Length: 136
Image (tube, rainbow, N blue to C red; front, side):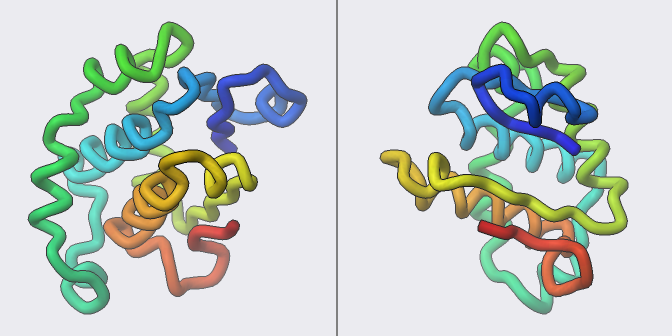
């Protein structure tokens, strides 16, 4: 379990990894994970070909989110190693379930934040199968 929350919480304490990112850097974090998933070829090209469109445009966006840039943007409490560990958890998982609270939806960039979470699921085929998908 990976918890993304700027605050120290009981949930973060029991997580395998707590990413205490700087508030407002969610999109940077998720695009940084996407960058690594592509770099390490943890993407499901067959699923993307069948169920998505225009991945090259998204790939063009995420190429600017290298681990060092993302770690710097997200703050002093997240390292390149944390980002890499998170991407490996995602890439190697049989199923990924993402859950978030209203704070993501109700922020000024809520739609963009949710879209980046969904993009991670789509690019790895972690949607439309038991135990996987974005859940809000």
